[in-house]
Length: 272
Image (cartoon, rainbow, N blue to C red; front, top):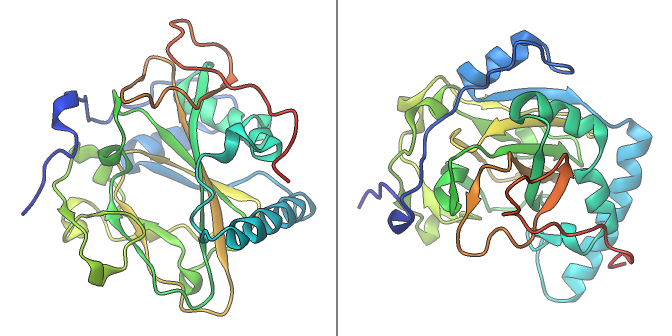
């Protein structure tokens, strides 16, 4: 049975708000236009090989801890309030300079999640819109997807449906067990909502930006190499969070004039 709204009681404003920025400082005018028309920008350079290699080693240690505690490769979700190194990624100027050109000078990061596909893994991420899951309104989240490993079609790179963000909320179905979906929603026949799928193939240390209404997903990793990326979710402060989703935020740049988002300072001690 198709579902139109996963959170109907919240009366969320789920539509795309075009970016109005005639003088971007880091992105080009063409890139801002591309985001408005297609819902994403990819790839963008951020970290050098040496820098991302250091963070990869940090992530590997986090993964060892998680697996030892009985978790899996998707369990590191929302750890930005307890891990100093993840906090430092959120507040990295080279990342925020890109995001600011889309959202303005006040930037709130409300969530992070490592999506790590192990070699030969059968799980996939079915086609979905992020905004459908989140108790946030209006739908202005921009996601940074930072490649920790090289991402290619062969190892399950994320793909998007360009222009699908222009449809607002798209009907979905609850995922079936047979899908082996990491998440829980599935949009059927995604190509009817935009152009052909576009894969986010990136080198480790590069990043992408995408709208919370852009249809995206990824295939299983049938290769012999891992594919890990860190998502960082940013909003301008006028976005309102229901269900206590404002509690784990970081004011990454600027301020929150309304005081809605609870700012979590950089952790003194890292979890490792």
